[in-house]
Every structure is written in structure tokens, then in C-alpha cells.
Image 1: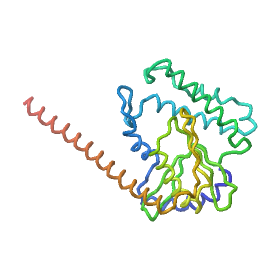
Image 2 (image 1 turned 90 degrees about the vertical axis):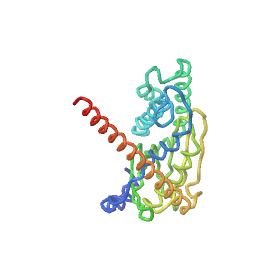
Image 3 (image 1 turned 180 degrees about the vertical axis):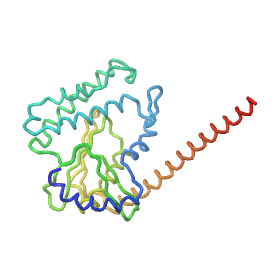
Image 4 (image 1 turned 180 degrees about the horizontal axis):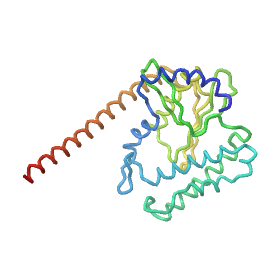
Length: 260
């Protein structure tokens, strides 16, 4: 989209060569980082997060996509609360109580309304809730990231202004995202981002990071370690599934003998 198209031509030309690399997805990083972030009882999903948080994060992401898909002049006339209402999860057993349901809904709606009222009012985002991937030859990986919102940068030597929206902030996820975005921008554009903004909606908190504030080598080291860790996790999961299938087959054989 927009001014990013020329920069992405080089990335697209390299995609054929990138197939030899294993892909590292940012959502896998978040899954790992959030895995032990909360100890929940009933209602916790595989990530360790309660289902209501996952449902609200889904609603926020798609509401922002709906809103910023509109032209700037239309956005100015469109209350984001109306779009959020269409995406908001129904009252169900995911939320601990009805009071909690309404508190979260009101808090998210108020914060999104406040943010969009002064956020790039006359601009069109160049990346909007899209997944992009770029080869990182020095790490033998293909880095894939989903950008909720990214804007062209007018700062010399900088490529994008990136925005990430979270229901609640998590320092480990933010750190991982900063390092991955740093590696991504250098490999896709040859430049660091101008800024990375992270919004923690229920906390009412906004953190702004200088895109060049982290040395590239530090980010490469982080992503390398993350890639090795995730590959080990995936290998362990495959072995566990293989073991379960072997146990099922053994059980079927034993049952078969029992019927003879």
C-alpha cells in the first residue's frame, strides 16, 4: 500500500529464495511470552490468558482495521464505538461477571475513542492489520510479523511509525515485538523505524520507543535466541504428539489382542 510498495518489491523478489528458511512468526513469540503471564482458573486458554482477553483483543484488532480502512474524511464522521459494537463479543461465560463485562467494554471504548481522535487524522496507513514476511539470511529464518497500524515516516533515514494495541501491556511481549520490528525494518527497508508506539488500553498507558534506540546486533541476537527456543518448543510438541499417536496405536493393538 502507499509509499511502501517500492520498498517491498525487493522483499517480494527474494521470497523464492526465502523458502529455504524456517518461518518465525511474531504471534508465536506472543504465545510463548504470555504462556506463563497469568495463572488463571477456569476460562484460561492455551496461551495462559483468560478467554475474555483473547476475545477483546480480537474485537480491538478488527475494529481498528474497520476504522482505518475508511478514508480520513469518512473516519472523522464515524464514531469508533459503533464499529466496536459490531465486533464486541457477546455476554457469555468468558467474562468473570456481568459487571466486569461492562467495565471492560466501557474502558476499551473510551480509550479507543480518545486515541483515534488525535491519531494521524489526515493520513492513510501504509500497513493495516497485515502480515508481512522478510528473509533474514544472517539468521537463516524468514521473519513474519502482523502490523496493526504503520504509517509512512517523514524523518530522514527512518521507514515507518508503527503502532501496536494491547488489551493489557506485557513487558516481555513488548520487548520481543521491539526486537522483531527492528530486525524486520532493517531487512525490509534498510532503515530503522521512526517510532514504535505501544498502547495498553485497559491501563490507559502509551509507551513510545525510538526505532533506532536498540542496536541492530542486539535485536539480531534476541531474535536468534528466540528462533532456537521456538524450534525446540515445536520439536517437543511434535514428539509429544507422536508419542500420543504411538500410545493410541499400542492401545488399539492391546485391545485387539484382548478381543481374540
